[in-house]
Image (cartoon, rainbow, N blue to C red):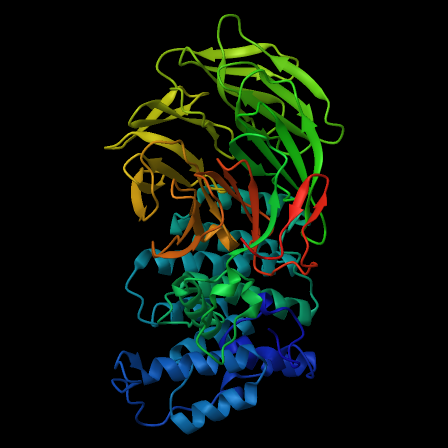
Length: 580
């Protein structure tokens, strides 16, 4: 956000200094830069600054603080004259005279004076004073070395830096620069402009160390505005579009049209109840499975239409679970207590059939590296396989039940399963650690968030619980309203930044909640049987798919497809003119 008067990126500039110092690095000679004073660029304070005066209807915004951060914003945008005029007219200075003096001393390389002034700023924390002194004296050390004053640099190291007793490893590293001066990482040359830039960087580092009441944080006003936009976005029940659409001129509020609530397509290739479906990570494919023992891979075209890509026959029993490989090139499918199959997405070829003598599989999933496969087994164990079908590891005991869900965290270190009817197991398979989530009702299914920090648990008592599983496990939200008493229904995260929760329901509808508020924002009608599973396209927040006992898959979006009034069929797909 640098202004036209700045010669470097915003991150390389400082405050008071932030815009005010813009003139130090451009449009003046090196001699003028060396003698340039902050007092020439910044207005002097008036007698009274009204420290206790507040503005705004809430009575919580202090006028002095508001004016100071506005001034900082003006300087950081390059409007140094306007910032100076604001200080002069308001009588409120951006920084105190002591801080201005301290910052000017840093720019002038008056190291001993700056350390002395640092103690006069009024800092209460001795540790901060020592740390700030350390970085100042470190700069002094390097500039002495650069000036080939080796003995003076050694004296500074021994008598000033080392006695601070801060970061002994760094002190030893500084010692090595005396022996090998060419290793000077700051690369401080004798060029005055380069040296000034180095000192500005030092000011930036000091700014991060010192309290914000002493030196206002860089771009503080912009940061506060960003926070306000974040709060408005989080409060918006229908926010499902990019942040670029938000404006500072009006309070943000999206309409319902941002939620995928229109039926765009009805897919009718399955001949029985559709139990499971899941979009690929890249959002280009959708896989579905059914009690007709068939798996179908669908392709999402550039225009948003979904078309049949492959039928995957071979399972002898209904297919209850699907898992995409990390690169979306392969697909795992799991029949109800039978074999697990691995498919090539491009060709539709079955690459391998995984079997375990006398046992069947109930769930499956990929390790993040795509080189190993995990599976839940009917004997309540969990197995790990390589791609060639060799069972690498098997963890026996009460590791899983017949619930066909298996979660694997992004780092691949934890496996998540339902180990008892009311208990979820977070199993650290490398460390053999175990964490448990205890629910008061029978668990039907669960879904892991994209960042692996949250777990969505569907219960038989018509509730969906959201758990934070990062660090200490904590229940953070409950979602209610859908109908659920008999069947296995699966829910999912979805929308922009996974800001929504969606679930199927036994009343033939899809339910959508706002994740932060827990408010039910939409019910989608159209199916004529229980909705067993939903999946939100991870790369398109405006595309949602639902699978139902009515043998169909519905694709939901925000715009109706413009088609003729007569029904169209392509590859067995029924396109619907936005109707239900």
